[in-house]
Image 1 (cartoon, rainbow, N blue to C red):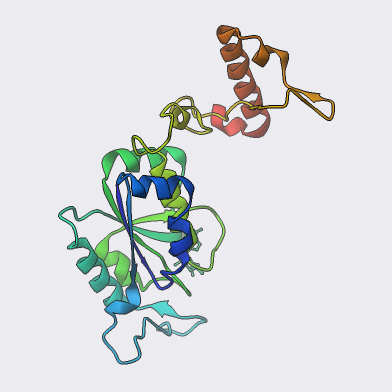
Image 2 (image 1 turned 60 degrees about the vertical axis):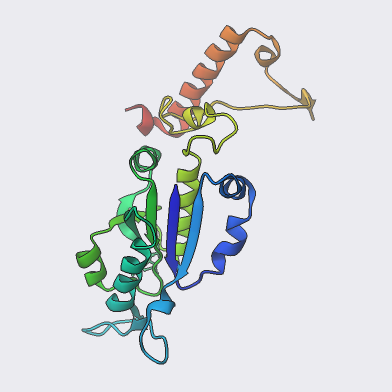
Length: 228
Ligand code: SAM
């Protein structure tokens, strides 16, 4: 799976790319993350990316020309044009079923990170990207949102997780779409809190039944909307 991230702050991705699961997936050539500075596509002397909104109002707007030119050039860097995704609080909410659908239908994503008051509407009208929001709150920029997207998709690339089963059993996932059961590891007892006996019993059938029940109870208590 290939990601091309378009941003004004490419340095935000340097630490992110070198950590943990993503780093290993890149090393094993299962995932590529290419970060492009949209400012490199400006044509004026001052490398201007933003301007004041027509009609007045606060803040600055990302200009259509460098953004569209950047996307077109980046698309041409690989034989697959890729799915263009624009991060915005106004987009479709990112949820696990959408992550699963994206991961199973696309091999390449071009992710646009907004800043300031966002993009000139014509970026959307011309490129017709999929608009994605990571939640009902407003971030300063699309970089963190694009990291959330990348993180959620990378987990679904075959071979990236040590155990494929875990991306089925995780909360919200295709295994059952409810919350995961509680988990424990050593020690068996800590400050009077003991690991449930059943998990030490070695009875796999009973453990599975207990986990299923815990998942259901937890979902009922915390997220009954998932059971509807
Ligand atoms: N003025 C815009 C609005 O009200 O819809 C918000 C702009 S926000 C300050 C700047 C950028 O952060 C956006 O262009 C987008 O890329 C990103 N962003 C902010 N909140 C987001 C969210 N919930 N999901 C995805 N991206 C978000």
